[in-house]
Length: 91
Image 1 (cartoon, rainbow, N blue to C red):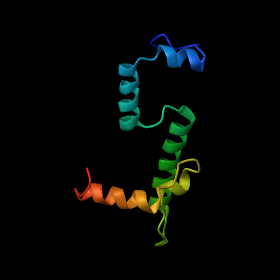
Image 2 (cartoon, rainbow, N blue to C red):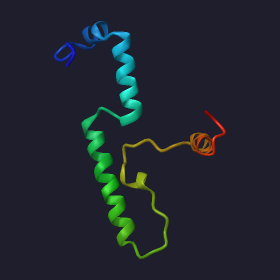
Image 3 (cartoon, rainbow, N blue to C red):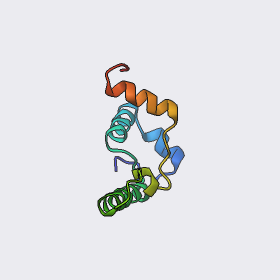
């Protein structure tokens, strides 16, 4: 683990170089959290959402985040910024 495994947080911070930090930051942006529990919750939540959406006879709107209690809900500002990105307005 790049010499970090088993270290205290302070030791890990000292040993982690800037280039390696940028590599991990890019990985997290692309792949998401490194927290295994959170990743499992996301996967199970997504499967629960799909199962409910397929089996739902009602026309009620469900959201995938309803099945992920620890996932942060986007703010209205964040949703607006995401919409601008989709349409190419913000880079």
